[in-house]
Image (spheres, rainbow, N blue to C red):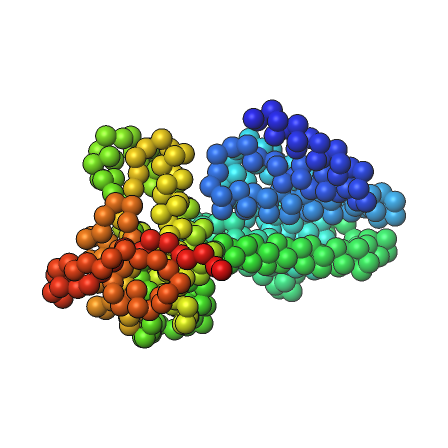
Length: 430
């Protein structure tokens, strides 16, 4: 499998080379891949990509600087040594990343460039002829996303270090007459005005874009996680600042499903087998719920709860719930055949008014309460394997489009005798 993936990846790279500017795509991909072979958390992998790109961009700026210095004959030995030292710094960072020492590369980025640039400028010129504080600001910006919550002290130190370097560049030449090893020649002044300033602006823009794009990706991931827990409309209300979400619905159908005898079966299976079986069944249930407009509320052990008519009212909630339950039964049969197990489900449905809302502040959940929920749960617990038991209220709500078994009366805790029946199938359209 890995060999096939490598061949496919190689073919993709070869194809990229023949597209317009495809070689740039290949180069960027190679830069992104530096150090990715080592074990890293997903967030650190994204940070590593940002570092690789930023350092490569900075190294490119330094190479262009050196070429211009030689072309314009604007620099001496010290200027060349300064440029070489910055290029060496970039190479060292990439080598640390490639060898799996990303943490130390982050430390080097956070503290190295500001001190290196400040030291060279003050040593050579006694002041800052190129507004290098802007570049230092770029490195400080990148530090804001390089370090996690556990590394706040390092991040704070990096910010203080950057501020100290900027103050040194701005204030030291004003209060102290620093010795100069070299003067700013006309060629160098030309580079400062027409190269350093635009390049610094582009470097900062690139850093800002990396931070912005990373924040967008983080927001998208957070939104996706929120949507995996809550209905979309409820998630939007939470994001807009609602503290308490509670709604009353007059017409909702509640579906409870239980995988019969799964508790006994799970005691004889390996943990990964237990999870694999439930995952096979519940993934199918999730797809069915989405198809028929049912909202998955939660899973409890081997139980599954869904509802129609929430969080948006639906006049067809009973019909959609019936179709969902019938599809659930087919899904359980498919999973049983696929897994080679005797799997069966009990289903119960009831409809009526409920109160629905979000509870909790951390592991919150969209849940619902009321007598309708309790009766639906009793419909499931008193049902039979492979059967969908519905209340008389739900049967009446459905009308004549579905077929039912003969009514029967069962004793429901807290409610007394209730008329129920089994949902058999949907009638074929004439």
